Image (cartoon, rainbow, N blue to C red; front, side):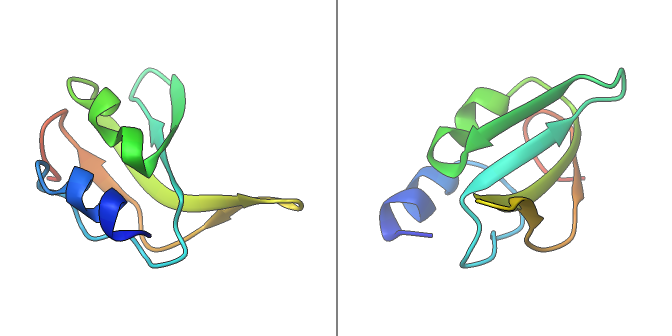
Length: 76
């Protein structure tokens, strides 16, 4: 994660992503899904669910760290 991406995450109370993480994956209670780049994490504001950090490779999605509950503004 670049210093620029870390700066964008400062406005949210969330666990620090792993160094190799590039994306955040949100799974809402009604089974809707969203995958956003870490620098676009602010687009998840207002949507509650479980967030998992990870990265995409040629083989597919690789999880980086433990998932956490997100209430739309901070980690629960």
